[in-house]
Image 1 (tube, rainbow, N blue to C red):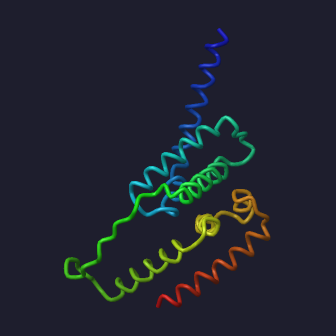
Image 2: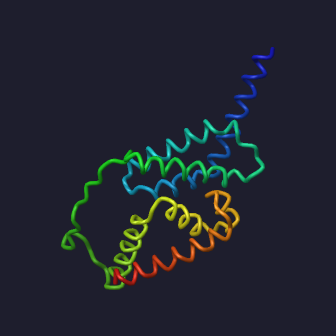
Image 3: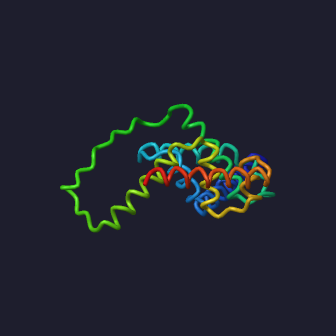
Amino acid sequence: MQQSAFVMDVAERGQQFQELLERHRGILFKVAHTYTRDAHDIADLVQEIAVQAWRAFARYDGVRPFSTWLYRIALNVAISFRRSGGHHEQHLVPFDAQLHDVATTDAKESDDRVRGLYRCIDALDPLNRALLLLYLEERSYREIADILGLSETNVATKLGRLKLRIRNDMSEEI
């Protein structure tokens, strides 16, 4: 009888995890896209985040929002993935303008700015990438601080410096 109750509890916990993960699956993809650009690496990283979240789920207490808890795990896994060199080598193919329709100068300028922004993001260290991602997700300073293990004051200071750095880097791109 007791083993049956245990199996039932595990099944219920698994169902709860699956529902929460499905509801917040965007977090996994956003974090993965922030730390790698290769489609295979993104898929590997999303899977690894899900596995690590499942392993840690028994310790999830529900005091914090699930999204905060999941961000913390996802960012830690992504940073470890990046540091371990677990990503595939990227093979870039040069852009040939003759093979593509280039609609307008405005579109080209916009594309150049987006590529410049990606270069700026790619040059950031893991903590600043996480900080930028959470800021762009419109998370409160309190939630960012909770996820990253910083004080709210430190979050505000780091964000101010990060915005200035990106602004300067983008002005150099032009």
